[in-house]
Image (cartoon, rainbow, N blue to C red; front, top):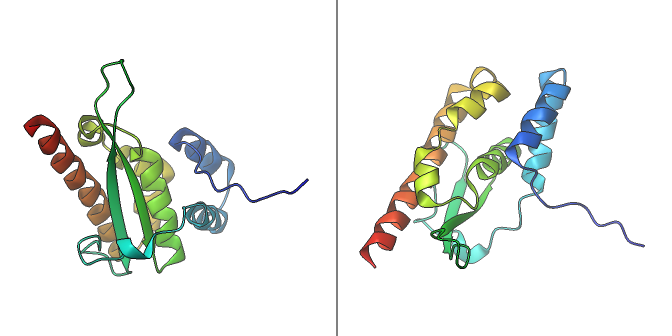
Length: 156
């Protein structure tokens, strides 16, 4: 019986619960880094200038794919995301971001306010201003992709 590492990201509610359980920020940073290790490998073909997130001190790439909604239930297409960074903590922030946004419809992404999640996690108070700006840039990138997918959906 082999025990392969779990590479699935927990849902955002689980991440919030886990954060409450951890007492100090050193443990919380380690947890965020561990979340980043659970990101699936980022395809080299996606490391393009178009997928590079501007406004981040670290190298960050985000890409999105539009997948068909549930058959027969009236749900529209959903967005899935892939991402990577050269910084361990930023990879973890990408994982948190994906736990918030992955597999939502463009409208749900545009309505979502991840700042409440970041506040609950205490990230705003424990990230450097540069990392906070980078996180904001990543959120804006996800929302831009959602706007673009929404426009393409309504145009077809």
